[in-house]
Length: 341
Ligand SMILES: *Cc1c(COP(=O)(O)O)cnc(C)c1O
View 1 (cartoon, rainbow, N blue to C red):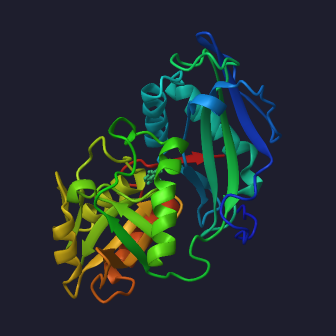
View 2 (cartoon, rainbow, N blue to C red):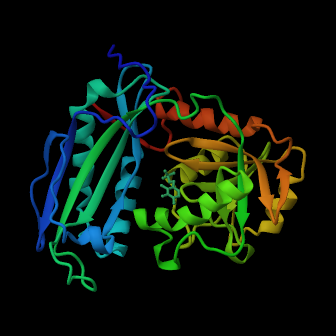
């Protein structure tokens, strides 16, 4: 049996595995992807992405199972989403097979660096426009660079699971409507100002964007309401990022006999009513943290606990069901795992 390195203690995303994979696109065709050592790129100051934000990325994980086998979680879903991001951004769409192979290659090359659970190897495919042309403001970049970087990560909750405090923002959207479904740095930087302001003014951890009183998501995670029998979340729309964790969570919740409701418009007043019930729970979902418990909401200056304000039992149960699938402790009923040997 192959054991991995100890669970890393460095902050998420600050240490990198030795090997990355790189492919280039030049006026209509891709070069063969090549794996090599992680080293800096050198860019001309006129490079497209630096001026016109032609960039998107993905975030997925490979986990080491109790049997020592390393498996990538939901590779196909992440590949499909990156292709959609590229398409919306007018970047060249990497062929699905090529991108999947690049990700598998990087995991294989860094197999010795996949930590023991609850650590994992976080994978960061990235696509950027690299044409050297500051005149290309209103045209797509004719050249692009695609790379897959890997980072051994530790337990997101190493400091203990603490319920988060979330401010509800009912005026400002997280991003522009045509960008809601794109996994791009531009969205993050747009949410950053309002999030930093809420952190300092209200002492919250994150902002839940709900322009016009309709819930979207936070800056980097999807929002779900949970109780012992039910999971409620906004139905997919182009206003927010279609989280793979969200989809996995809803599938597992339904497998476990919970009722799953995807609401066309999940309104803030419904969320506040939900939170007032003693058995109410709420959580944020995303690859990095899997499921993070929301303990209180701040709405129009009022601080309201969600249920008891503690980490909910159903949230923890769903989180461990999902992490058990990651490490193949629970049957992979939906074909979500890609073993890498
Ligand atoms: C990546 C991301 C998520 C979470 O998606 P997962 O596929 O679950 O990791 C949620 N919201 C935004 C804005 C994101 O960029």
